[in-house]
Image (spheres, rainbow, N blue to C red):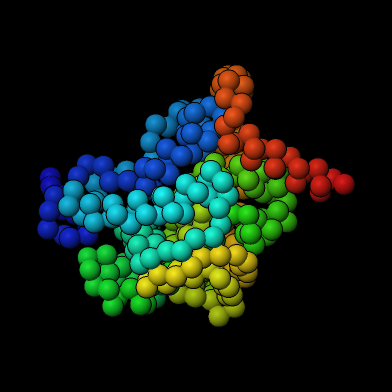
Length: 291
């Protein structure tokens, strides 16, 4: 049975559209002490690539390529390789982040059964607004609120205070993983799409809590300059912290002794892998807390 592209709704979707861009998973594999990916849900099995599904046609895939390439070259790789945290950006950054949040909305909206009916309706409306913007309706972008935070600033400081994440390691948890999902709070009436791209934290705020504060993090659809310092006060920080801690704990507790030995042996053969640097940073945090 033919699956139509979820973006243009005209052409047949290709079998594999990546939800997280492929360059992110390739970067994580390079940074890994073993050179492989592992899922917290099946840690004893090597993962060759990020999650993909029939989502878009080839033509619509190409719509995203220029923005993805600009994000990779201007933001992602400079941050991953050199912790670069200041850059100028054009409309491509807002477009890229919206393409990311739209993909996750399409995937996750059917799983929002525990959200209020109102929040489910808000999510569907946001998904449709994002789709129109991605197809060229620039005016729709004015109502799409995107925020970007690089791990190393306020997010790092908040995460370092969480006992669960300290035990699992905030640097390794964030800089060696990628994830994305829709999250909400029925009590606050809040809704967001969050992504962690190896320490590049993206947040699409769809329904804001009145108590949230985001400084120097909003990405404008017209372009601008991104630079520290930043300050965040949001319910999303608690959500991300707990989810990361749960995933890393699941990974640690589920991996077999044979796989652990194989990973340690493989890690010894890649002493320059970036993950070793992140592991040392986490050990330093633990030592500071002990003292």
